[in-house]
Image (cartoon, rainbow, N blue to C red; front, side, top):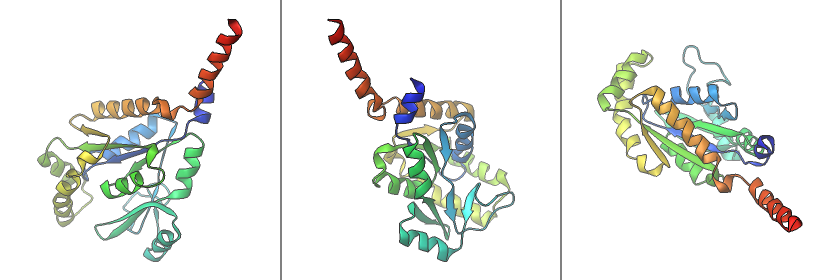
Length: 218
């Protein structure tokens, strides 16, 4: 029965959003590591790769003209400009995964999440917003990365409250006080959403079969 259910279920679009440093990227990696039915939406971006990043793994690194061409052709499900760089989610691999009953995970900000929720694929969205336990802890996490200058960190902190102000637009909101606990809750949300009646189209034929069985036995 499990194989039949996976074959007929339309894949979810799982959106994880948070202020930079609140933990969404770590949570995304952990979910991908433990759930084989979830794949990652690798975004296209015009920003330069950071040390250790690989083209096609963390991001598809493209030029601004190429990115703008993707927008013009409708090749992106969502796109936004953040800190002077463009980011967007290629549409084709997302739609292919959905048709195969596989879920796609998005590590994106509220702007991208809003665009996906308002798209023709919005019915399949499950959106989760991750809050930091405090702004002081958020700043500490950003500084501990050692990746950004003080000026960049200051800009990220200034933008954090703008991000947080959109928390009520999401289906689920979690405060990331403890990473293990938050990860468990994210996994629970995904499992529950998969079990929603409207996401199990095989049930219609199953119930019809029960009716036929009943009529044959009576």
